[in-house]
Length: 337
Image (cartoon, rainbow, N blue to C red):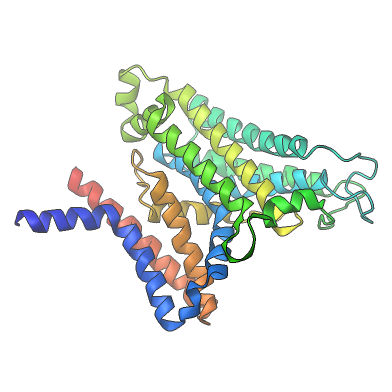
């Protein structure tokens, strides 16, 4: 194999996710050129924003060699908690009838804190009790849904969808900077800021370096002096906080919340991470790959619906992409071995 061929293979291996995303956009645009309209691209970014934040939280856990099935339910809990405290005063069915208008930051921080607490619980179970992450987070997923449902069913709400959210809150999810075709949604800006902060954590902090070391070889990380348990607890807690933030933004974006918000989001997040190059064996993953993975699935959902492809075909295509991504990842891992 000559040098040029090796370089080409290396380039394709490192950038396949971006090539697939570009090919998807090109194919849909050829079928319907209006897909490249500014409004369409803005809608795709808007829909991707909360999913990016969830996927970045999931990436923290996956890079350590774990998994997190509780993400979607934590998103739902945060959405319900924030929405329940941010309704307009004259709404007919207020969750808290006598609650005065709170500064937005208070319910937002409470919702993020709720996510952080359940992430902390996941970390403690995995790190201290040595429960496999799949089982630990599966249990937390069920428990969080139960807690959220009990809260959602309290008087006087009694499991009614939470609506009538304050305009200053919903503006976070629907408002934008600028005007006309070139306005940038606030929610997109928030997602970009979060992605940048996570990139810094991954690449420039001790926690990030320890995270990759644990995922690469946990025993070697212990031998090198890394406190694996402490780092895992922190990582799961940060992931939970990101899920909490995503839940708040999802409530603001949609203008309401129910206890079923976030259902199955964890699977979409895991799929986006895997497609984006986060290794299923741990130790490998980049922020830009995760973002690209989310965009691929959003383009599939939005783009194929845009050109009239059946949702059932969309599921088949998504499934094939996931399997291909995992197979490609395992092939690279086998080659390294």
